[in-house]
Length: 505
Image 1 (cartoon, rainbow, N blue to C red):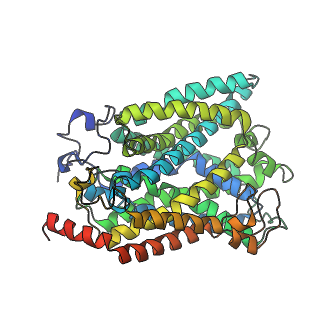
Image 2 (image 1 turned 90 degrees about the vertical axis):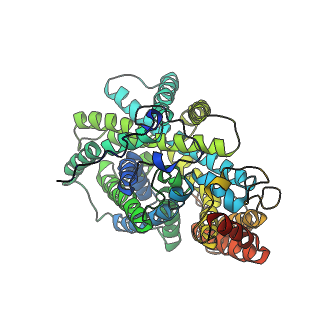
Image 3 (image 1 turned 135 degrees about the horizontal axis):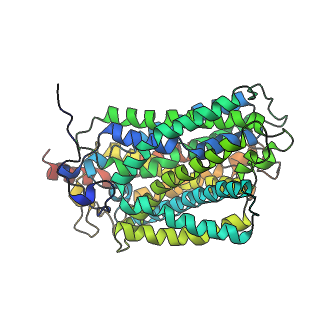
């Protein structure tokens, strides 16, 4: 019998779980890379078996879809996890984070612009998780007979921010270990919830009369963005701990298995629970209100004791997924050029999140916050994802890791003043294209999104009646624009020749 080898044996103490990781966006040496593709998949599975996706499934039903329409969106939308797999293939070679690798395509200085967009994005996801943590906590206090007040909400936010710093402060190995450990208990808790739901769910629920194909496209954009696409800018933050020779097919396959499949299941469960947990007349108002967990408050189908246990599990799990966002925002701050250690960046982000979350829980509806956030996320992330992958392909899937660590003119990726203007131009073109087909929840002039307006410009209060092709416009136009402009300028071709010379081929 072959003995099992501990991949962490011989690693420095700071690279082990429950020790403070010292690595930031610097290169991870081969002898410190302990992960296998299934380890990264386990981390993503722990993050995907998450209450956030349960809520997304219910909110999707709140658009007015039938269960089967929502299911089609869930399955198709989660195919975007293949993009996460593709955007995780650079980490094993470069040994650095996404926005360390991004210096090749955009240049060391040009990459800072997109890194800033990502930092704002990660803050947005962190705030979303904190809002849900506060919401679940309020249900527990209500069950205990404690009156909800603004003061209680502020206290809960402060406590939650303090707790959520712990795992990302310790670092990558700790998060992988904890999130993998959460898979079984949360799998069980969702199975129990399904058992309570089995005799009450109504998958035959009819769609609202106003549901159209245009609204279906808006639901698809919502689902794609909150499933795989919204994680593409984080993939290499974790895959950089894989061996440089990690098989690409296994990386993509394991990530899809660990990310997409659990999300499909949990979002479907959320859609099913929506069909019975509240009366049709007030379901949309509750799930789209300030605290979606209020749906569990005044109902008799699910026992009160289980609701208490479920909310406790929800809180623990939300801290787990928020750790990924906080970790990635920390290394993104470093990519912006701030002279902070990774764990110092975590503390700074947490302080900022504290004030944003207090404002959000006192002044905003969760669903409005979520939909507005998705709109802003699509505009930048769809074109960036395409540009990032096209650049990688144009470089024949290779980088020079040591050159990515340079942020001055000695780097072969310096381009013009540290900016690859081909990528910046393509990013801006892609963002305009995404906006042109975006169905926003906030009113903007028709000329800003003419494709959407041309398919229906009646304002309903939840958006226009027009279609939403923003994700596809951003991906296709952004990627094509970069391919055309970069090929015309020859910047990537020149850098690729220098890469080949340094890499010896």
